[in-house]
Image (cartoon, rainbow, N blue to C red; front, side):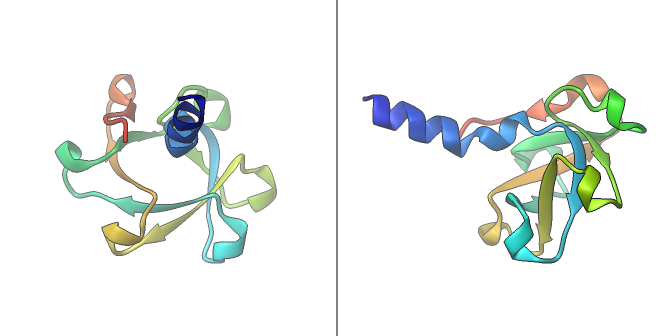
Length: 103
């Protein structure tokens, strides 16, 4: 039973992503493949774009950086949902940021 719990935690580690995020095109340097969902209803996570890395201190609050060395998480945007580890939808309200589902 403990094995299953550990595996579930690993699968949902992306639910805790916050801070500086770098969008990379090299699959060897990323932690996650992400699909941008058009609909809020179907997204696994709602993401609010923070204006500063200091404000990106809770899950779902991301500050997009152009400096790979500054990033805490590297992602790759994919065009097909089936290739993604999870999907996101960008929102305008910080309060609703975070995971919507537990896989």
